Length: 372
Ligand code: BDR
Ligand code: CA
Image (cartoon, rainbow, N blue to C red; front, side, top):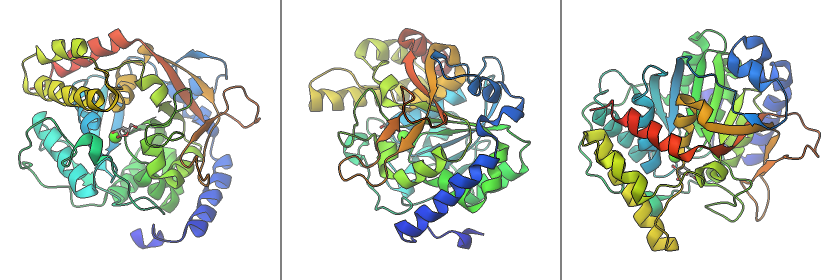
């Protein structure tokens, strides 16, 4: 099956495939109004500023987390696992990003051990590099292991045997229509590869909730681009053209809920293993920013995505059209958000800009408290 798509094909050929997917997507109901789900109906309901009603509180979501742990990915995973009455996390798929794939998949297995989910939460390894570009990592930020700040043990159990893309295809094919939420916390290579190889699997997806992009804030890897989108802009283009309902938690919102020593303290005071791990990781993130920028705070990235799934009422955003810059000399990976509607292009995402930061940290602490 995997032979049908060769991620090493040249960029021009890949983009032709991607454009074909984009064109085909028009037949697939944009924002899935036919889904009958709150996500689809609310997402299709208008373009004015509104609270993030793409997701209704109370419904238990069936979730697959696609990630590149990564310090903040680890906290995001723990946050999700601590909210089991809201989120049924079925699997973790990993991708190369913050660190190479052999470390992201290993770190995901370590994090599931912390939460004592070793046997019940499969981890799949996916794509080892972006679709057409060389891998750029953020090991300078997340440390050589990808989980700077905490002691790491040898994972207690091996990877699931399937490739993450094959797993995604099988799982989404078997899923009831519009039933699975994909929570994407890294470069979008796994998702784009799955969509390109088996476009029909989009029908099994309820929505994609992703951390990525920047608009009102500038980039964090280049002046124009946020890391997850910059690492694999071609993959991001495929995902944003897919027609699947998308909720974006960009840098714009991450900087509005900064990690500070005062916010770490109550989490450390929990005294449990997962609270301590999260506190130590957050402290390492703050220490990095202090060294780099001289401030004692760090953006809260990936946990905003799982936080949105757990407590959507804490967030506000707006439906907009988002295009991905894939050819710019200085702007590669930029998320071009049509905030004012000039382009006339239909909305393809809900772009989150606001968060109740204190509410967010209270929710994070409460969910971590339920874990070992
Ligand atoms: C994103 O990039 C990664 O370094 C983080 O894990 C997060 O997903 C922030 O730009
Ligand atoms: Ca990440």
